[in-house]
Image (cartoon, rainbow, N blue to C red):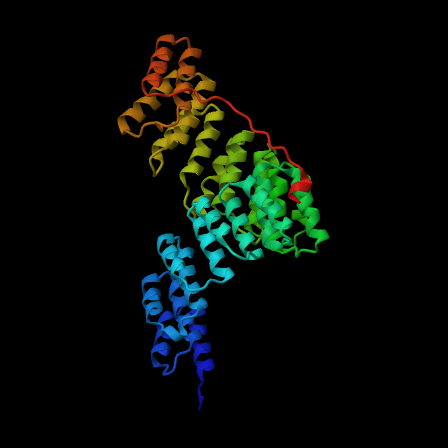
Length: 422
């Protein structure tokens, strides 16, 4: 170009930044004689997005005062928040001379990312003039951290304040409905999508499939699924998991085979769901065929996958095979894995295997989770059922000495008024 102005320089720097080529972006940045506010924002944002927050902060500190505007501050705060560095994000946030709606939402999302929902709500309450983006950040944070009642309550308050939900709101609320099992409320939200002409994008469709599947309405879940033109991993997993959770194990296997034949390939979540279905449905041979496919797909079997296989073999009475699998695991067996084997020992009254488990746990010093008293109860019940009353009593004494109390069963009831939420 015979002549270059700030716009063309910034366009080139921005292009390199968006492609992750910070080296080339930095070279142009240094050559640029007159930098604008946009130039500084591009380079700071680029280093922040690549995770190099130290360099991003160095550039931020060099911005001339007359060019450091609210966007410059916001980009740096968001860089910290998006990486979960909330101490640095909060310090900078508190120093901001002025704040826009995006930085409020960024800090809320950052706290939710690290699980500090209480602090996220504190920040939200301080927003002087809230908008839909702020509400979405809070509702999404609640849903992602399992605070689903709070998510539904915030959804109601948002509408009471005169804000109409968008696709992001709908996805978060449907997730909350799925986790709470609120099928009727989920159906009302589904109807709202049509009434308010909210765009049925991939995320909304996935959320609807997930909600119906988790709530047990597999007919509607399947109806929506089959009507989707693009099916990604999330919707396949939702269907397979839904079938597995609600005991329709043959259907889960059928969908797994369909997924293998599709353009979307199974991931770790898919394998976890289908192995769970095999365990609950008693499909031992199918489970043994599927488990090796995890590595064949270039994935790594996690401890939960091994736990499903132990459960599968244990339910089928193949306790020695389950024990052998545990011994061959590339990681230390955890509380859930040993618990699955002990549960099978109780069903099949295999006292020799119980003793092997106790010996292994003691020898490896990988004790059954000391905070999980049900396993002590399980051992006591196993001994009692086999008329080994002395050992059962000894286990009860151990529980008392460790300060364990049998966890009482409990149920929760949530009174739902659809109009209150919607």
